[in-house]
Length: 496
Image 1 (cartoon, rainbow, N blue to C red):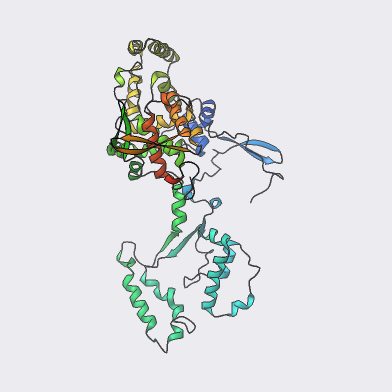
Image 2: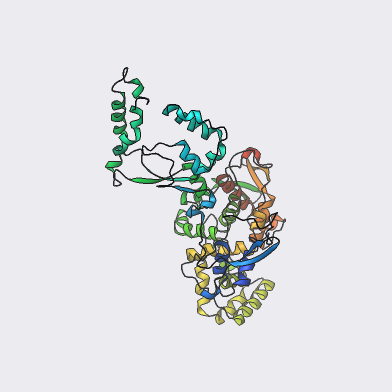
């Protein structure tokens, strides 16, 4: 039952709730902000081994409980049922159609009056005289009724029907016997086609196969509207290995001295096979599920890892921040970023160690060499080096560290802006090849590479590859993007 709590809707007091989720989690759940982050996003902890103590697993959410007043409720209580889109909840438009509430009669045909009861629709134009017409005309009325009432058609897409299969020959007589009734299709043609019904059943039986499968005959199955099912599950944003590979451009332009060259691109299949599932889980956890966000995230990850070739920074040993060089899909660098991630996971790190590393990092930055950081290595607990290696080698850490960095840097803010692409050409030999850039994605790339949304794109490492990776990923993931409409909003197609 739904009750109004006032004459007007009350605005959510936390309009930046999602963008501020990381800071909220670190404030409310200091023992393990990662578990708290999941509580705030999903209402439950998804991790296999949660670290947050039971008494700290509260998820306070602001609710309006009477006109003009707001309070908080802990939605993590066991009495509150948690549902996801994968549960096909009723409030998302799904309705289970089974015994007791089915519009189907015993002969598995849909009855107009039963259907109206289920969809709670009253047709004021309904003509009671029409009920006296022959059965085949009533079936015509059902089709007309559905076609002329769009709201009914929308609700029908959410039906999840428990019904027998049309490929089950054992139910043919029940399903099709009306055709042989005196007013049925074959019944009215008995004089001109006396064997019509029998020939129809024989032909139909030749196509039916369910009794020859392990499923067997005489059973019922759950049926979804196929397009509604696909559109519903596409919202999860999960990318199969083949889909992830397709987000990369076929070729990429890069500078070679004063010239531009075009090189073939191929994401490393072994990395996708080993790390792809955890990368999908990280994108789900950190809300990187829209085409705009996924394209921005993957566009940066492809460049940072050289098309998934190096989850450890290539040549990182020679950098001034070594051995804290880039690792993971967004290449965490410098001690502070690693420690921030580990504390997000709830790992206990002595503040004296943090202070020592911070002083060494400041010196390494000033002197442009890693001598201070290498000297600090001698005083580190042994687990620090092991954790550092995991960021590149463990699928969970490699993906989760990238998602955490995305969250605390608020890269989603510029990523959510609809991109306006600028098209240029680059001369490669005798060819003029297209090159696309985008200011909104450039700010995402700056956030990832330099820590804030700068518009000085020339300072961003590998900006050309990032732009090309982003454009290719977006064209693949967003149905609504067209090459012909890159100067503005898409002129048709699917939703972003």
